[in-house]
Structure formats: C-alpha cells, structure tokens
Image (cartoon, rainbow, N blue to C red; front, side, top):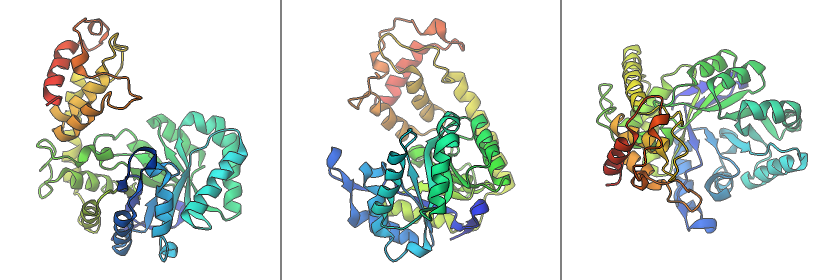
Length: 372
C-alpha cells in the first residue's frame, strides 16, 4: 500500500480509503441490516493489505454502518484512522452532542479521528457552522472526543474556495472523478493551505464501474474503466485519499491491486485523458447542458434527468449504468418523475430550450435506447 500525509493533521494514511456506505445488506426495507459475515471479512482484508482509513456516517446502510465498522475495528483501532460525520445543522445543541455520543457508542471508540460536518455548503457554513457548530466541534476536540475537524462538502467550486480560505477544516471530503472535475481548483487550494483532501465518489457512485468502448483503452495497459477512474483521481498530487465505497470482496481486491501499484499515470496520459474528456464534455453539452429551462414538463417527464442518463451511454459509452439509472426514474414511491415514454409530444418544452434541442425527438431516442 502507498501512503500520503493528510495535510496538517500529519497523519500518514493509505491512498485507498474504505468507504463504508455500500456494505452488503440482508433483509428489506426498514429491517435491512449489514451482512456481517460478508462485510467484516471485507474490511479486515483491506486492513490486512494496509488500508488504514475508513469512513462511515450516521445514516449509512440503514443506520447500521457505524455499528459494523465498530465491530470490525476490534483489535485494529490503534492502526486505523476513523472518519465519521454529524448530519445536524439545527439550533439545538443537545441534538448535535447526542449524535456525537451515539456515534462513539455505535463505533465502540473513545474518540473519532476525523469528524465531518456532513454535507456542508457555503450557506450552512455561514449560517450554522461558523456562528455555532464550530464552537461545539472545538469543544469536542478539547475534550478528546474528536481529533480533527473535517467538512464533507457539496457545493459549487466558488464555495469550496471560500471554505478553504476560512482555514477552518483540517480535512475536506469532496466529490471528484473523471466525470466531475469542477472542484479541481479548490482541491489544489486546499492542498496548498495544508488541508487534507479526501475524495469521495472516485468511480462516480458506480457510474464508472461499467465497461465503455469510449473510455476503455484510453491509456495503454488500462482496459477497465474503474481502474482508469481510480488511477485518474490518485494521479492528482493534491489528493490524499481516494475513498471507495466497496460492497464486494472482488471490489476490495481490485482496488487493493491498483492502489498498491506505484506506477502512476504519466503526464502524457493525464493530458490525453483531459483532452479526451473535454471533447466528450463539449459533445455532451451539444445535447443538453442541464439548464432546466425546459422544466417543468406539464406531464412530469424528467427531461434533463433523462438526457443526463442518456449522455452516459451515447457520449461516454456507459450503457449499463445508463440503463440502470433510467429504470430507476419514477421507480421509488417518492419519485414522481416520469420516463421518456410519458411524453405526449405536446412540444411545450422546445421553445424554452436555449440550445434549440429537438427535445421530443431525443426523448424518443432515449426511450428506445434506454428502455431495452
């Protein structure tokens, strides 16, 4: 395993982190829980191979992830950097402390190494974290309940730069992958400021776990897209940890192989990838930029969402992932969106499209390509 320094924390951490949000489950609905017979050996296999960073959260795996991580840490605690998260942004201090105490109990530990504000954005920072929650974080740190303050970030590139400029977090956890590179400047600024950078979603939440004739073979010797995706993230010198949500032993073994390989993507490889991705992005934007001006559809058709999924296939060649995502539209009881075949050809959307896309025609094409 290869190790990097997690910013000003000084911690030496494996460049592969174990994301404990997609552990194998048994049961259904509210009764579903993590399959310990599968999950704990997976975690231990990663530990044995040198992975020493694991990340969990209150709500992961139907609120069972922290418990399983706590069980897996027995006998390993002093060798592992443990990351968890507090999702509360309310005004009730008792709730925030209660969640921290609950996490310590579930994890069966006396302290958490990396403690995140879960899902921070600039608004929550200015309205809740800076005036209130930061004081509670600092108090928890003084008491030894947590060791380093982190922010799990979901916002714009500009917001990330502003957050970095505050100097508040020791570590940030951010989205970054082949398909989402918008935060690169903020990641570089964080690294320069001594803030550790943990990347979540290096395989784009599974979207890059698919085969692709477009992306596969882009770099000589790398045929599998998941390997390319992971190597791309790790080739960024400003990234400390690539956090992979691993749900099978096969995923663990493949990620271990890649992350123990000291051969990095060359500068020429990275330029070729960047240039290819820019060409694909331009092509994707010719189809739809996701501006949402066409919405709302009077018949509930999720036009931008359908086109985003369609682009995974027709632009990036990720057809398996695209068809799964398309099938999920409107499938959940709480999802009122409708798929492309619900279009009645009314044409209300097309005059509102700034790119003058033939929306109805492309919806028919999406239905034919993704509905198979």
